[in-house]
Image (tube, rainbow, N blue to C red; front, side, top):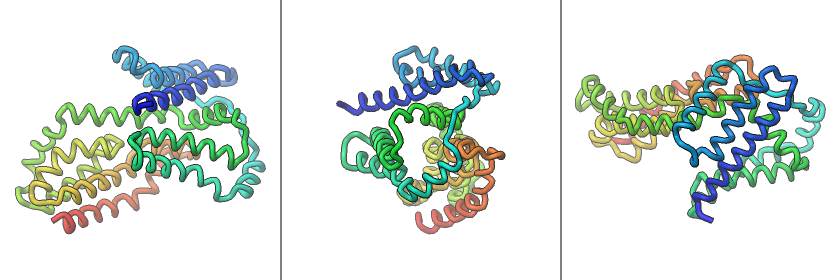
Length: 305
């Protein structure tokens, strides 16, 4: 079985879970927004399964429908039954730190497959998630028929924000292909003093953080900002490309700590933890992100030249 087919199976599996969420939403007659919720998850599931095989304009139209459902707050959590607080505390004492083993396995399996096979990291991530799920069931000794129900419950807890990582990743590709990096280089040429290494490094790190805050994704910002600022104002002045690239990317992730656009890091956890302030995670991270960004500027200036 080749990589493409394995990836297709992973997407189909994700789509099935999304479709199940849609069915649970539709069957929950106590939910006044059950039609909108069901439509959102079923459309999302359909895109995962059938997206590559339908006209792109239809996919775009369905994404707009999902956006309208989300903007009009027509998507809400179904009435899922959960275990009692007493039962959860008892299980937590019984299982202890073994609960972290499945989570750690995702990274270990994904890295091993990416490093030692030709399947790649994305397939490794999917296989790692399946292995982690099986180990979770063995550790907790729960029944396997709980998987669709609890997967749907957690997915709906995250809500419409779960789609943001995919959309932001696509946005980065669109920006890069549209030549945004070249435009930025032209603008910065009149701002950054020629030959001033410290100014180039500072602007590059700041731009990586700010653009990542806009894009919500350090990898998406990296392609655009490195072409527009990193290469002409840092690497072209003698900076070591490996050092500049590594520190530039992690400088971008300082911005990830500060933006709601970094949904999978900042907003999704707030939704899962049911925090009253949805930006509470970001507010706690400001004290780390700003000093870390300043340190990046210093490290790049002294280590890359």
